[in-house]
Image 1 (tube, rainbow, N blue to C red):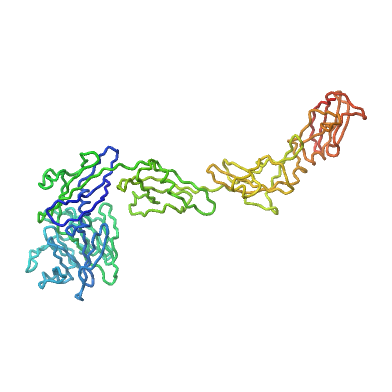
Image 2 (tube, rainbow, N blue to C red):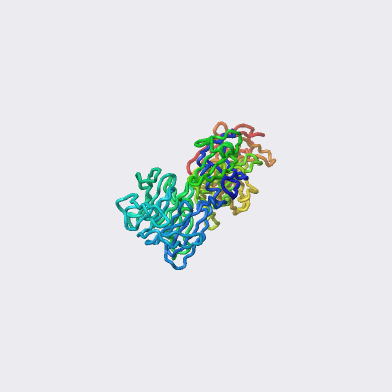
Length: 620
């Protein structure tokens, strides 16, 4: 269950109804205005919260030290603050501290157990002499004493004249007391030392008279856990250098506050309310709370759409004094947001900085919704103590999963989404070359007018190292390629003697790489290809300068030098033979006589033995 407290109040007396309400926000799973929650969780939360503003319920852990000081740690579960309650005047150290139901403080130093007055003075009479190293009171004001070298625990009653009714509460058979014996939720918890480096947490089942029934070993505590403290539903441990909280659900430890003076070691601990039992009960009406009738408990769902006021009664079970706290239950729906999109950027040498506010804007459906977005690189539901990350996030690998908590109206009603930031690698291309060691496009072609050109796409397989689908474009300068300005056609007619071309390659992710190549200058001279060879379909030798001669087109000078053309009439008579490179071509004559309009035949032969035949028309 999620709830969020938004208003605090100050309690100034007992047996009163607090005039200022607490407001607790609960989250509505399905938008119907109702929320199911556990009453006990609300009660515990209120008990913890009111202590932050009221000394009567103030959450406090007292610590005794090796130099005889007593420290007070206020609000250890939410805002710990350490102050010196009593300062030593050189009287020696204290091995433990305990508090009875009357808030009387008791201390031991290994030999003497004494009580302390409100002015930090010891009473003149000491209660007993023991080799004691651990003290605790239960809710019946029984005092439990642990002896540093014995495997049993003593239980005694205190009187103004001394200790009496001493008994062996339980014999554990091995080990000795490492720390205290404190009650929490009708169980007793003990720090028990089996060896120098092996402190265990025992959970003891007790009856209503707090007699021992059985115990289990929950696991190993931090070394030198000399004290335990039970305070308002939470369990704490003390070592010489820190106070820590014990989570009994998963048996984990969270450091609360460090000892700032390592020479004054922390030896003992006690919760201010360790020997007091506060009972809590919840009611729908104020009259029921005052008369202590019609209590609601367990799983409960609000009976009024959108929330209602309930009343929590907190009572000291020993004195019967109580306070009533009106609690305004407010039901808030979860935020309505889009699923986050992945953020993708291209990179070459360093990983990118991603602007996560782009995700916030994309997720916001209604601009009037007061949504807050908090980002993490670890799932905050798995690790609630993880710190948020900056919205200008420096990525550290190709693909990372991030988490965003979306909260509505600062209500505590939040949803966790995940998305990815992806660094896409730019296309892998041949590096830029220079004219001294160029990447060359060596294939060229000729058009119908016998003009040479390059198909720039022919270089793709040489330039692009990666496999995949790419778009290519071509430019005459690197700046134009970067800015996609002045793109040139892939069918390119050479304009200069030396021509550098820049190729821009874009992959399916939109990532771009730029390389370059040069056009081979003598391609039109030395190309052996017959791919583009053209045999004209007709000849009109009328001396107008157009089609007056018949000759091949679309091949290099090399091909023209190494080939021969022979012209025949339709009957196979040889009319003319010439070299296409050194001769302008056939002009439609035989022995200087003009031949009539008709079809004529040709034989094209290269030095390498390639032959092509065909016919064309002579028109007069």
